[in-house]
Image (cartoon, rainbow, N blue to C red; front, side):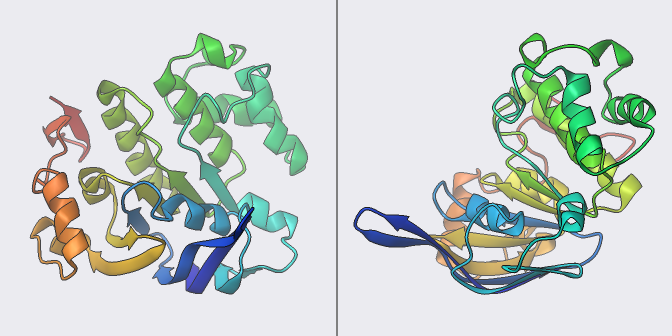
Length: 265
């Protein structure tokens, strides 16, 4: 579903330019959840923005489904590929009600039965009709992120890009959002790319992971290798140590629930 080859993303600065991502290559199969991990400034979110068409491509090749990025992006791409941002308040229009937020992508894409789809989308992310005409400031952080997820899914995309979707939330809410995303992945068979600095979150949610440092992918491995700490690069080992040696259960979770989800400690 996603093929990235020798991707370089370059930004202009007052003193010249900086390569935020250099020669990055990876692939993601259809229906797979792929993780990008690394410290702040390593280039994780820049790759996600490049995949969504929001960051310039200096060189390399990117393809999502039948869409080749770097060329003129068709409207069908905008519907096939959706993104959930890190800050659930900043990504929502403060003067739009939840109804307006969810209706806008439907109108842009010419999708009918809008009222029905809005109610269904809210129900799918665990919000009832009572939230439909509220404003972002009337919602909690977790509720805002649920609205952002509903907005992304309401146009029925094939690929969902997740830029640290739980890092701006309270620890007590993070597990709920992760469980929601995991259920949506299972029900919709979505292809997902998750950016995170937390190996415990990636280990719960992803099947394979790429480790980034200073704009480069230094290692790729499956989650079984991460759990067993069978990694090759020294930087990956340092991330494991920083995550507390990486245990199977995140710090906010004690065990998997009956439905395979995270339960809070």
